[in-house]
Image (cartoon, rainbow, N blue to C red; front, side):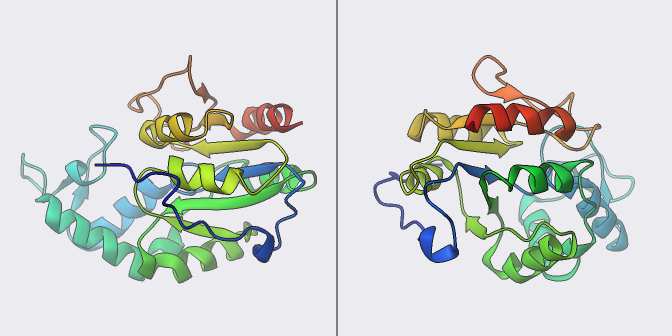
Length: 220
């Protein structure tokens, strides 16, 4: 996928969102960072008569019809993904320690949720965040997050941290905004051994009780 230049990105106005631009900024993903997305998606698929087999760090290639050896066609998997955001994404469990860690970080930094989700999933995602007392400003993104993260970072004078599970997003932020402190975390213990990482480039910390002080030190 071709990345758009961060110059071309139309970034939301952080000040208009109530962000104090002189404070540090923490950009946080949702799926497998704040919430157990794979688990919730698997539960939804089971209601559709499908199986989600954790065989690789992937999404659509893990969806199967019972008894079949070949995964479901990717286009059908994407349709179920869209329907999950319409009907069932509110059932996702919160990652251990995430709520308390963000609450403590919010005392000295602005928290912004930066998530890749379909536009029709904005309301259900916002409701999920609110129900679990994670109702920080929400920004939806499509594709690699580096250009938008860079555009947001340019609006603040304080240090910026970025938290995500996907190596592609971390690499994108490193390319477009190398001064942003980057942290990789994978909330679901079953996925951690499968998740590709570059710990020499992006710090990998899979538990929020350890991730919180690391982020705090990076933005202090």
